[in-house]
Length: 394
Image (cartoon, rainbow, N blue to C red; front, side):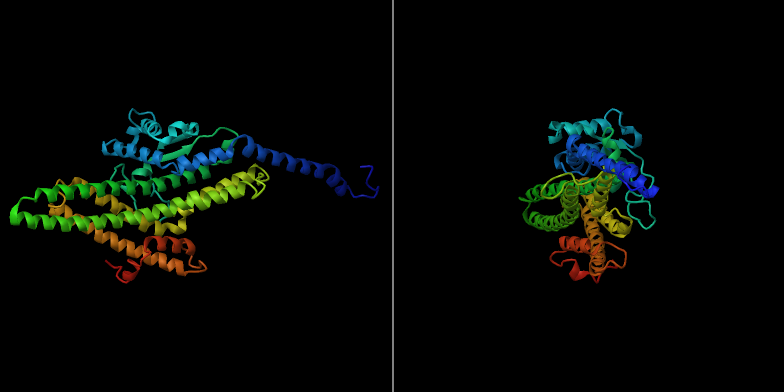
């Protein structure tokens, strides 16, 4: 105080001698806290584990867990009957997936947990604009099967304070969406295998049947070719959507997170305090959710994708329940009807994406034009659906 002139106003004195030093020390202390989170408490390792297990980055583990949950669904175990502590329930499914995958050698995988939830609203969001999977059931033939799952990554204080409830819930929603894509892909892989096996069995059965055998074999081959093309078309769609969301979560979003946590070049901790780190993690969760079409503005697009994914599960159901697929006219007609409905919905989806992509400024408040353009190019890279977009009435 003695270094200041006697005429110095009191507010200047308090600013120089009291508030200023406190603020300076607060900045230093906050920076030290941020560096402690990142450097000493292993925040980056935990975020990497969240990407592996909550965001399905460890593909073998995610597939193993889905396989066991699907088995529970096929066994008719529903609701709380397969709760966290119930024998043969979620805990056993998770434990089996850990043992059967690379996660067995990762100590951080033990922090991943699966709980049971009862979906009371549509899986995507509670807004009324969504009219996709409205009544999810715990069945492997229902896209809403994964709505009964709630994934979480357990952290202790003080790291847990960086993941508030909103961030954790957003990550859980993203996990369900990514698992939903994996569910459809696994179903189509099974359906494709069953179709090919049916072709081998049926054609060989007609091999020595004379003229009738030749006609039957020709019919079986035509049906096999049609069902194989349908299977490829469904698998292409699911792989496009899953690839787009997966690359967004594990590519762009993860890169943005790393650049937000570390300075480019020096690799020093970038956030100035714990609040900044929490905001970075929240932005990361929101970005992943946006790539998975979980924002309210994406509800129409999400609905169209969900309907197409449900049709993929329906195709697997028809194929699996047919004892002689290529000679069963009812099952073949059901597959053809599923294909026709699928094409109608994908055409409508491509029209919606084309409209969004042409909205350069995003003035319509719909899907991001760039993301719509990227997804449209994946799905309709050769113009197959775009060349027929005029016929969307079904």
